[in-house]
Image (cartoon, rainbow, N blue to C red; front, side, top):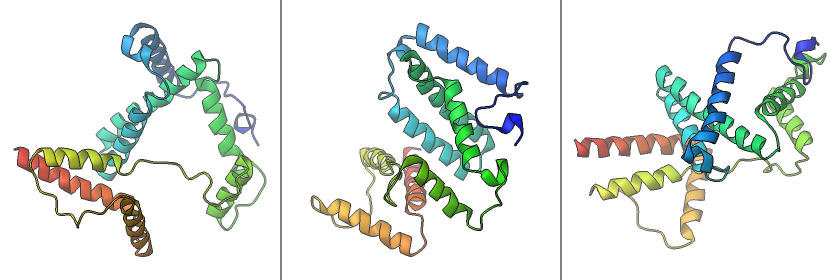
Amino acid sequence: MSETAGRGARHDRLPQPAASLQRLADVMHRLRRECPWDAQQTHESLVQYLIEETAEVVEAIEDANAGDLREELGDLLLQVYFHAELAAEQGRFDLAQVADAIADKLIGRHPHVFGDEDAPDDLDATWEARKKAEKGRRSALDGIALTAPVARANKVIARTRSHGLELDLPAEPVGDEVGAEILALIARAHASGIDADQSLRAALRALEARVVEAES
């Protein structure tokens, strides 16, 4: 393993993007000191922006729009810098430690690239096994991130109804039946090989297009 590829190793010569990344770090640091809004933010207050920026990256990818993807990746990168800046102020960790941690993790999970092991036949299974060992996970469900796939749907539906558009929906469920019906629908989609989240995004785009058309 080369010195620069080893765990925690640093490059003697910085890569080309280093100056731009440092510039962003300097901008973020100054905003925290001089902008009232940025100075008031916390990890918790930024969660909604992190979720929204991530969703916008996905949308740019699905639209195959390189210009939008570059912009949205920048917005998402800002969130990483922002949270790292907050953590540094609290003395917990800084941006360099974030970068080193993910580099170390990737090296550790790829011994067939950075070490002497042969590539396993099932890379996905090996990857999951290493993650499970690293984090002490006991259940197959451990580590599945919580997401908000219906948050956008709630917003779109609210705005659609505010424009007086009718939604072609089944009979209204009652109480706890909502969650059970959503879960059953996702299970049926999975059994049919359909990505429910992707399908929901596509349906939302169609609905949004109707709203835009109605507004024009």
